Length: 120
Image (cartoon, rainbow, N blue to C red; front, side, top):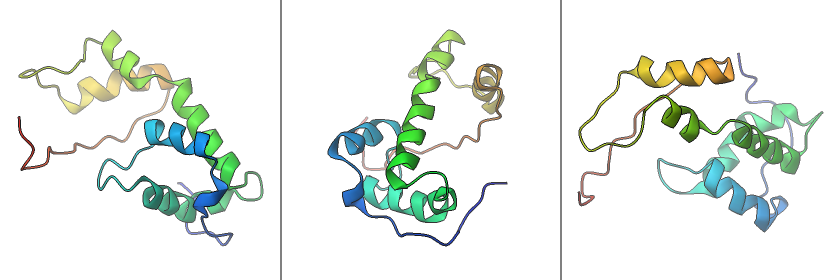
C-alpha cells in the first residue's frame, strides 16, 4: 500500500525550480483539470510528505521525474504495436501487459474521455 496523509511540511510551489516545473509539466501533468501546480500540491500533501525523512519536496519531485524518464511508456507501447489510431481499439490487458513486462510492475490505467465540446 502507498503511504498517504502523513504529517509534514505543506507544498510550496516556490520550492520547485522553474526548470523542475517545466520537467513536471511534461512528465506529471494534471490531465484532468490542467492545473498542474494544484495537482502536484495534492500529490505532495497526500504522498510526498510521507517521504520527508528521506526526500525534501524538491527531491521528491526530482525522483518522480527520474522514474518517469527511466521507462519510456510511449516506446514500450510502440514496440507492442500500440500507437494512436483513429479506429483501432485495445483491451486493457493489451496495454497493461507490455508495460508490466518491461517495468515488472502492474500499471494502474484509466481512460480519459475527450472533452465533449472538443472538435474532432
